[in-house]
Image (cartoon, rainbow, N blue to C red; front, side, top):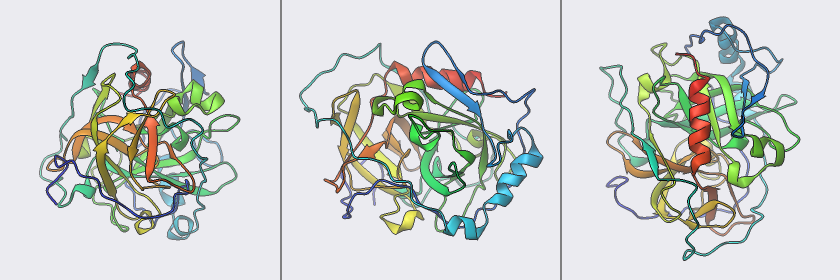
Length: 346
């Protein structure tokens, strides 16, 4: 395998059914991020919405003791008994690659960021071992366990993880998930960098209120954790971020699809995106449930396990046609990024 720079698609044959699945046990070492008081769900004038991360019984995760309870919650039995979270079929037309939608503003970017902790080899031996990409575990209302994919993103406070909106909140008429944690480069039960528990969760108000696919964006602010008790981006580095870069770009999509390997390892697809209509982009890929929230990376570099996040896995067609969609990253993702960063502890 010669890395992300080679733009070829991996064809992964399986029927499409959108859901998320369980993995195996997690072993966490955490330090809670400081907070003056737990805030209830809030929304800003630009359409972003956030809530403090909580345990299954509704307590705010505001200190090391409560974060440790999240660690203890994830026993092997709970992980093994997780129930897939079905996700519906795409409801919009396929669109046309020849369309040229108008961007919401000028193209912008945040550069990738290297980890600050020295002495540990973070380069993967394979493309599908990106250190900045990991598996997410959370509990759903009623107590079931589920999983998604996610990736770190560079920022000044070095705490942000990008995923899909439906991996942090149920959408229209729903609630926030609880016991939310991120395990970078998880593979077959191994956690080389430990895991990180969420301090707060954010998404777009249009996702939370009406399940808008175009706004299926999520960002989690992570507490200190992992094997060093440090910030997540200090530990594994952070991807860059791009917005308003156009609907037709070359990307590498990474995630933990349960239809391939039971969600126990990363898989990838490579190809060129096109306009799917409704402020969304589409690419050819057969990864399904569990890959939700996984990044679509421009200029992916497997020697550092990072690239520029240009979208995330949102949803696909059922029974499946080898394609999936993600939100087009325009000014809305930059707004959500700024909003989550502003609410993050230093």
